[in-house]
Image 1 (tube, rainbow, N blue to C red):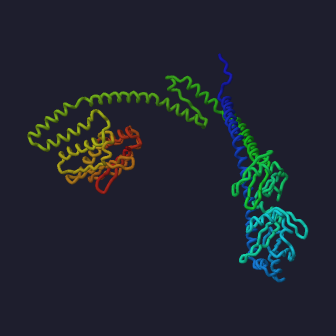
Image 2: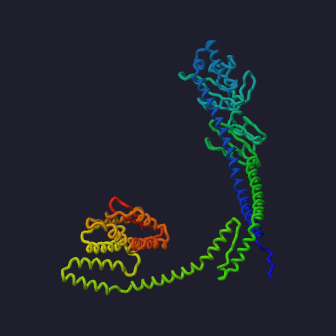
Image 3: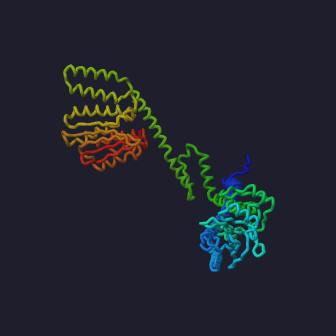
Length: 581
């Protein structure tokens, strides 16, 4: 006997569970390792870029306040008076100093104003005999000459009382608004708080560095351990973004340089973030994912091992029965109590055994019925010329005798038979079906003089739609047989065919006796039942046999794309058929 090296559901289940958990989780880990690392790193880098943009916005907002401050100095009447040719009175000079002292700006360390008569106003003092070149650096003088009316922010130095002071200064020419006279010069020393408040609303990392540089690379402010050397400044200068553009990112020596450019004021703001800091959230996330994956694998294997054991006996029992199944096994049932789907399988198996023989007999009977129907169909396809010729002869005799009622009756009967036979076809155009009903109604009118009138209205676009033949005549027959059984004249039958959405709606109405509620309920519920149940709903004597036949054929042809509904009306009954085109 061949040795089975690896056999048993439990062992294979554990192996497959292990493979099914390791393989997808490993693939997921690889995908996460490549995609999440990249995406989380990119997202973290975007956060630092946003922080740099926010820092630039804070910086520009503070400078906007400086600009408004200098505009207030321009419109100050005492400063305007100091630019006129006449010298100021001591009281007026005191007012100028007072205007400079109350700057109303927390970022101004002090203000120095130099009028056009070589008078300097500083710290509540008036210092005569001071020229711009005695105080301002050459850089400041060139900047003021190049831009006559705009405030300028410069990282430079000034000399006050022979002492050089280096830092960030806001300088601006102060012009007289009415007279063409030389301008004065306003100098504002920027407080260090200016640099600190640029970080409002920004989450700084302790390992990152932040800086502010002038356009020539001079460091105005620095916070952090990293430094900008000549190579770094060269890289920054080559990649400076355009004015108003988003911050750009550069990489060098495993560090990210995030740069924002403000050409209007002439400064570069940026941050230096180590790549280890940017990648740290991604690495932390990946470590968590790996731990979860390992835990999930262990749990899956353990659950599979424990859960498989109680069901092995029943599965093997079921396997043995199915493996040895034969005709003799029809009486061999299976009993299981596992409170799982195995119980349902056993019940289904036992049910299958109990019905196989019955189903086999039903199949034989159905096959026999099919053969009989095929035979009858062949019989009905026998050439009907003999019948038509006979009717033509009777029609000729009726015309010779002048019997118009007989002529009409024979013509209607001929039309009725021709469409009923329809060369053995089961489906005919709706045009022929309506002609068949009209022929039947003409015959009934001859049989029952003055009992009823009829009217047929149809949407011509539906005349070519094919339907099973003889589906309307049984409904119309019930209108006459049961609807008009209590009247002798004045009956009316109205047939309408309309298009409603994608459906063909066929409505047959009569003004006779209304259908009773129980019968209407049975008729309306037929389409929800099986074919065998529909055939047994109505005994033939109650007039439902023809309708049952119609519903069975429509269900076989259209399935769910067919509806029928009977409804009681004030006078008579309506029957509506919906058929999907």
